[in-house]
Length: 411
Image (tube, rainbow, N blue to C red; front, side, top):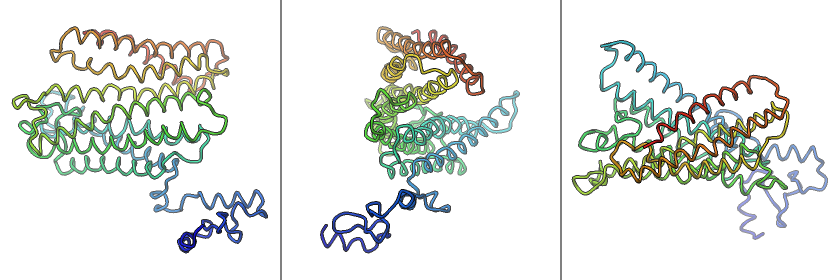
């Protein structure tokens, strides 16, 4: 160690100072002090890794558990706000000519409800659960890139606060959570409302991307010794696949929002057919993200079910490899379905038929998961408790949704 390195340690806390050989200085009770017993080592590590006390410590900590709790609390606050939007809309629609709110405020409520539930609650809540559980389940002290993880939370809060402050100032988006052009373009949406939508989308998706990158690196590089990929829990597999879906899907909607704000503020005409643009390009880019987002929300739930069932069935999971391959297949196939949101836009029927096939094909890996879960229960000794009752409800909703999906999938 050079003299410059030693000089730079003057302002370090005692437990962080090192000797010229690279060891913790003995006088500071470092772990390489040969006289330290296990209890002393434990106290030293606790002092090094502790979360600072107080509100400042809670807000500045990079511990994955603290950040996950922040995410969960914030997401539930946004859930409450979005729920209040829904209550006001339902009261307005509860009778003819109710007159509680006007059309302009209704459009803002409608948009803010969708934006809040999709971008500020649904995706953050599943990623927050992963932030908390994945490092614990793979046996690492913290998530990879802990400061990036902390950064992701503040970006998320900034985007949500930006949207809701705009709502308080009567500047909230009023173009639906999907903000289709030309409705959201400069001609039909003057003012700053659609700009708020575009900016908020960029914030929340940057946040999701940061969490996804940290999760992927954690699973691949920070597993406990001896934990090979075939030994990691199924929930961790679900979060790993979900994170890859985020990495490939989220840039599409960020590009969409960036193109929209360029059309509105710079005059690029990317989505303006009168100037050589393409309005359908907006839908393609948006739904290339929008349908994988369904599985960004859904795959972690299947991982939870795969973790709950063997506990209450009192036997190991049936078909572990089949469940893992099903998760990967669902993540892969989710990128081949987006056009079934656009069957009414006049696309060529031959092209639409391929998306019909993909929309039906994704039922196969989902069906494999159902049968693996049922086989686990059938061959086990189930203990009927509340978590398993929730799983039975999940089965019913999942199967009904899958069967009715055949009709919407058909072009």
